[in-house]
Length: 199
Image (cartoon, rainbow, N blue to C red; front, side):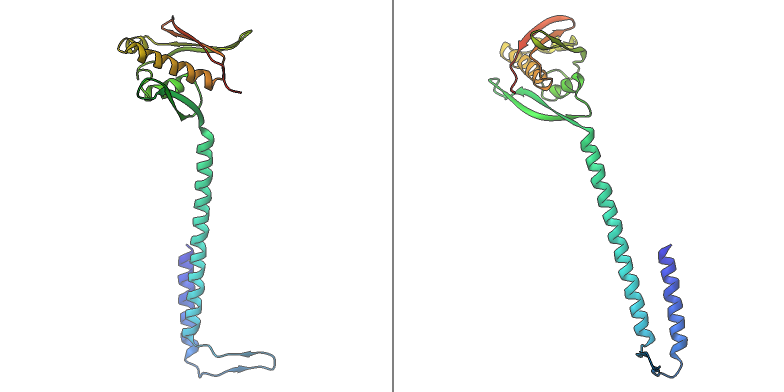
């Protein structure tokens, strides 16, 4: 809409200047102000430069608004995710590596999904139940995984099983700042671990 108005303004200026340009050229003199001669071409060029400057300023304003909107979106996206640590085998089954994962909310399901991406649990392993309790001995976690986890462990060597259980226990203990964890599979006890977490 602004461009249409500007185009109409430029055309009007050209018509007026063309009509005025037919008069004899001269300098207008008054006692107070002397107006220098300006050809219609000069006036047209000045008008076009002004309009172009205005277009450039408008584009810069639009770009600033877009950058500002993108920055707000990035901040909102960052605010929507929480980070947590996941432990997994270092590849030689003699220790653990860790990585920081992100999720919309830190839940037992989100942690198990992250563990599945590192092959610590099978992709079809589900969380049947998870709870935290404060007891005299400290904060205790109770995690019950689906029977698919048992089938997954049956395919592993004893060393691989130890790494898997250690990875699950350490991941949950650290993220929930707990002192102990009881891991069950389909309601049957699998492992109980205790860990002193760092202050």
